[in-house]
Length: 145
Image (cartoon, rainbow, N blue to C red; front, top):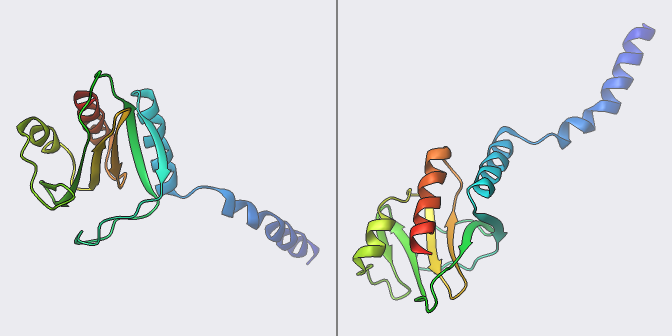
């Protein structure tokens, strides 16, 4: 009887430690983020106000993968993915730049937004997929930087 009491007390004491262990999806995301860092990308969670006209509202905060830009006078633009393969600007006009469109076609369907500022190029992503998806994302960001 005392063995059962001791075991139950130990179980009650150790049970909160199980809550501290990350879930499988959290562990997968952490591994993806570490791999992105090895590829030269930076990652942060950014709160976003998404346009009201998107068919489904992406999460906020959202994972932003970015890298610095290297051009002296870079162009500034923002494109959202309305549907898989359909990229539009803030006025919902389709992407007309053939160079950008060729790069956007290689991105997965769970990329919500790609934006280029004066200092960095950023991509907002749901972080689903394997390392091959991350490699495609890194290649696009490198090509557009």
